[in-house]
Image 1 (tube, rainbow over the protein chains, first blue to last red):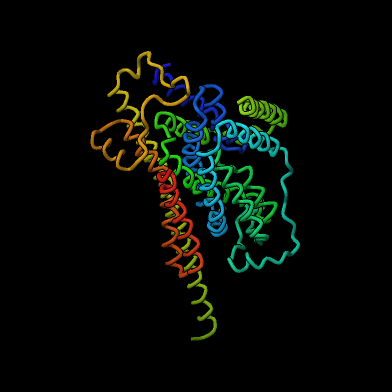
Image 2: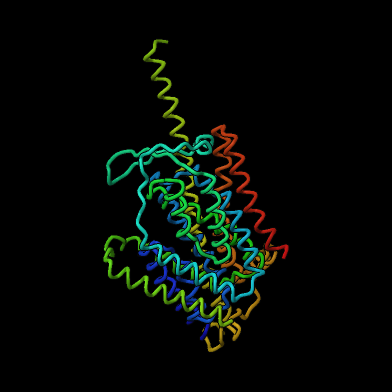
Length: 278
Length: 145
């Protein structure tokens, strides 16, 4: 394959991954890494390096819109970024010292988990009052304007320390595998910290860019980011994400979701097997 | 000052501080957007330049080796990218785009530090500065290996 053919096919596949990722709410990284390794036979380290760059591009693009709509809780994002960026540094460091087969194994497990998470019930925060001294001290409680309800919704934040712990883990996964790990961040915010689901999603997207930048620095300095892989991947995933968000809403069919989840589970099994076989 | 006037003054002060927060939010939003668009432009230009410089990219040479590793050495230091840019190398332009993209969230955090100083919020100035330091640490960590 010549570099031209390679770049064009990577661009095309990444665009598809971006569309799929945004339709499924998974983000492009979790789809692009298996594509680059299983389909193009690229070393997983360079696949992760390219993926982390694309994660920054999509997160920054999405965050720009969310901040405008005032859906993001900037204070919660700032506090939790302490944990995610520390985690991302840990993860990116580990990735350089772990045998490559373990990267495949961990990727397979996280991908399977993320696919199954798509079936989880969306938790709606209850109204009962939970004492939250940390959130009070950090002034995390806030409100947002809900388009569907047509009014301002006031919410309280709880269990800040649990949230910080979970975010550290999400950061490690993100740094280790080059993915945004939104599948770990959103539940940490809406289940543990009781943020409304829309705020959780927006804030998670906003944080993903900073988390990814923390590990991307390590990958760049280590020489794991190949410009001829990373540039078409980031461009494709970003274009795909924009297209996907336009399509969103037309793809609510449960059957299609089941098919996608089945495919993702199959791919995660392939990654797992590749790692276990060594 | 009569009571209603005082209340009005208070509401004005409140809306003024909200206005300030809004300005910061819009600044952050524009910053993120500009960073992404500029890096994509650099990707495009850099790729075009490197194809123009390397006619062999169009012909039958295999790009990825049997081990899956890239065939050419990767630029991974600021000085390397600087030297490549001075020589107008396509891959250095693409790498500059990658660096700009990585820097976008970092600059966003940097701007937030000043935003919190401006709002006289010491606690959040400290939190944001710590995140900023962690991000800078990442480059040092990768280099130290």
